[in-house]
Image (cartoon, rainbow, N blue to C red; front, side, top):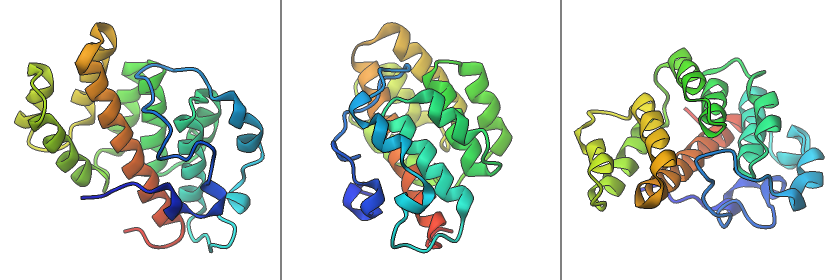
Length: 194
């Protein structure tokens, strides 16, 4: 099973706190992590990928959109993701809208791209996490026959409203989703993706 390790992503993506040590994002917009604002403002594809050859500029831009989102700067993430006219750019765009929360707009962006290579490993993670959970709504994931971003939007909406263990589950699963999509974006950017 995939294990996210921030050290795998080059000097340009090394932050304090590291990407793999920052707590799971809230289901809503959260509070931007202001100590990193200047660092993120200075982050360009060239700086982020220093020492690596970028073969897919759109995927590299997607990584930047993902980093802004990870540290709760939704407006900056949105500015980047809406300019990326790829399946992966639309995925980041949908994640940002799910966090706003603008659930209908998130679903619109998920509809724009249909399937994504991240869905299969995310489905496996979701199944494992749901099996270990006692919440009926969460265990409902076990009845899905594949990853369904629309049902996950609905589950996040319910969890954000009700809170508790369901919300924590959705936050953890959304973090796994972020990690898988960031890894995919990074590997595609440097020519190691599918």
